[in-house]
Image 1: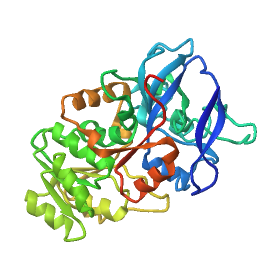
Image 2 (image 1 turned 90 degrees about the horizontal axis):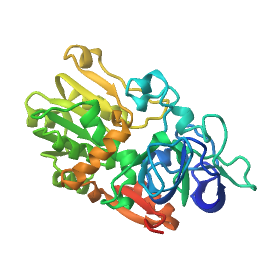
Image 3 (image 1 turned 90 degrees about the vertical axis):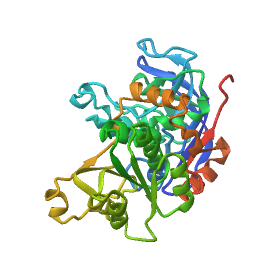
Image 4 (image 1 turned 120 degrees about the vertical axis):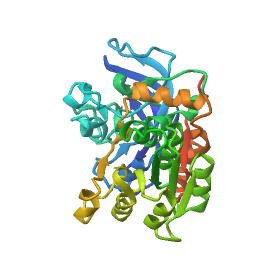
Length: 371
């Protein structure tokens, strides 16, 4: 079938809307008419080739839409269902079978290879035989996408479908880090470094977890004000003082938990140094391969601290995404306050606004629910 897709052809170049052809779904795949897709930092990382992935490619990995067709082996969704598309995973390796699909042993093949794991393609252009697709097993910067049953999550029809795409990556990463990975208990303290979409999702999740001290750290006063609105009990502008000293003033002993969304080694070091005895710091920010974090060994050993890597909030998406939607419906997780909508042909404006910090979470409107 013919589709319109946003293509990145070379490193750092703008997205270009182009016509292409999309295959019908294979036996375990799902054809989704895309209603909206969030723009995530990882899309920019690949466009700018800060992480290896083949170009030209159709990106997009926070898709939400309506199921149009299913392969004959699909059992989890049906035609007409509303769905959110999330990351791809094999479902068969040890990590997947142990309940950790975010650490699938074949994560790269299912998300960054530019094709299905078997090397075949879903999207085609006769003029561009080397066009790559299947980004996060979806490539949802397009009017239609084919995804695997594994990463197609059925969602209720009584919530705005155009709002839900970011639950498939950025929002579930921040919320899952707090609720799944760190398992923050009621009455505890947490410092959250960075107040983008991931960090603010973590702030809201810390409120859900009933943490009593929630400290948001950033250099953007407007973002810090929003963090307070979303549940932060304290904020620190890291440009105006010593963050570790400020954390000590607030908590007395340091925080039980820290969560870094920036990927910046110096900030991760600060996050660890701001922990109390037996504190745990989670980290999710994508970092260039040549960057290294340096600690004095005593920063970790003497206080019994832990530094923990986190992918996708350790989520099992078919369980966690509906949980976040239920919290949203109850008014306990108002992630809609983070978003701004753009039309599909405004994709480059949306990407620029995201990179400049003008918009926390851009969402592209691509289709209509009932169209």
